[in-house]
Amino acid sequence: MKVINVCVGSACHLKGAYNVINKLQDLIKERNLEDKVEVKAAFCLGECTKAVAVKVDNGEIISVQEDNVEQFFNNHIIGG
Amino acid sequence: MRKFETHVQLIKYKVLKEVAKHAMEGTLMDEIFNIPKKIIPGPDPVTRCCVYKERAIIQERIKLATGGDKNNNNIIEVIDIACDECPINRFTVTEACRGCLAHRCSEVCPVGAIFHEGQRAHIDQDKCIECGKCKEVCSYNAIADVMRPCRKACNANALSIDRNKKAVIDNEKCIQCGACVYQCPFGAIMDKSFIVDVVNLLKEAKENKDIHVYAIVAPAISSQFTDVKIRQVITGIRKLGFHDVVEVALGADIVSLHEAKEFTESVTEKGVVTSSCCPAFVSYIEKNYPGLKDNISNTVSPMIAISRLIKHLDEKAKIVFIGPCTAKKMEIQREELKDDTDFVITFEELTALLDAAGIKLEECEEGVLNNASFFGRIFARSGGVSEAIKHVIEEEKLDVEFKPISCDGISECDKALKIARVNKLKGNFIEGMACKGGCIGGAASLNHGPKDKKEVDKYGKLAIETTVRDSLRVFDLDEINLDKKPRKDNN
Image (cartoon, rainbow over all chains, first blue to last red; front, side, top):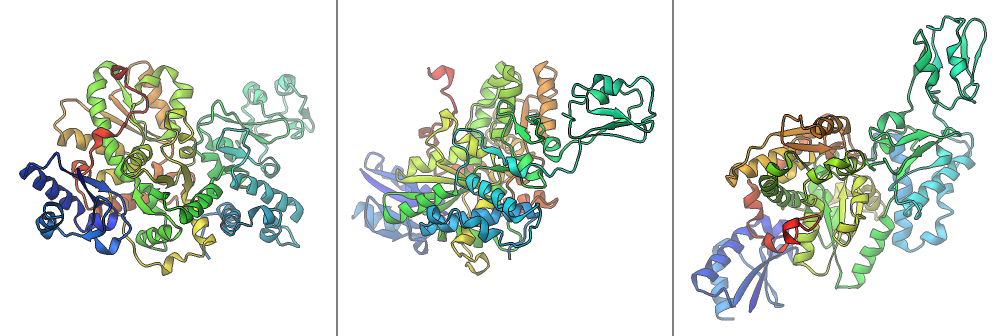
């Protein structure tokens, strides 16, 4: 099980974290990955400048925007 | 220099700041006896007979600032030696006295405090125990009852004056709302402070990466800081060492949704449901209307809801609530809520912490705080809870009739509860707020201005999320227990 932690602290929230989460949830559903990938909201991941801050399991913080969610998903979840 | 509404706030602030500063520097135990002299340098006294007494009072304030009397579980304490200046003799004989023959007043006085001289009754104030019997029996209504500020402030009827004329708090009745703390002109009643614990926790977290200390901020923050932007305050709080700052208003969103559902399920059986977010109001029902205990909503308060959410998402979390409320300090000590919120501090105490750490808010860059919806944010004012629940009922299309009665202050709450007790309430939901105006009128608010209500709504409109649903759309709330006590059907 891969866990995608998406920061929902204020800075990330304002940059669209909630929409990023909802898009990730849609992608997981679309591709029938419910058993393999989970999205979790997390409070401050400590890198507010990288908003929206996303962390896959215990990996590095990756900066994701609303418009590149799918690209992130393909690169880090499917390809990762 | 920071501006305060009164000198009482100022002196409390000075003590808290010194205590916080030494706690931060690790010198509190060494310096604790030097603080009074630092705050009262002398040589002339300001409000009392001499500097020695003023310093003795400061020492008592330090005791309260460092947790107070451990054997007294009330958050609110009277500083005995500071409570002796009240200029008001509660009962005085007025011009209306005719110097009659009956002398019912002196006959009824249990301590022989009334004497007659020059065709007029007089009260020997040294003997008077303020029982009020003379007033009751006077045929001319000639005895005036001018109550002390603290007693006047206490709508829970928990304050009395003892034989030595000191204020005494009846813990059985006190709801810890802090009204007396705010109203005593001499600051002789104070709330216990846990800033030292908070300072120590933040220090520990600095060394230990496995501790994340979260500041959760009450929505009443909207009316607290007039000279700087809220966004600067957020940066300031972070600079104190908090891992993140989260709005309690998000907890209020959670509560609105949960409480609306609970209301829908239980109102037919209960008839009337009351709100549960104000701990002083809840305590008032428990102490004065035990028959209505089961009518109190079983939903936790926004503070507890957000604490549980954060702890669910981050197992390293420790949580400090920052608000305008003294009763919240009592709420977190309730058996069923232990381990949720770790500490409660007030806006007054936050100010002291920031200044002790040398953080200049006006120089702080603007941070961000945006976790909740408009509805979560308006919980801070009277009427907000009802509006939020009404909104959820409409949005979720819940099939229930919602008739709220918003009670602003304990006196209004009492009226509604009295009527509810005899099943005559023209409504089915009582929104109870112990403080006038709601949380923005809280005892430990920095400002109690008339414009505060507008500030709350203005601040509410700045929330990024519009509806409660929007605000909660990324959280899996099914995994979080939002009930105070396990529900009967779960047993």
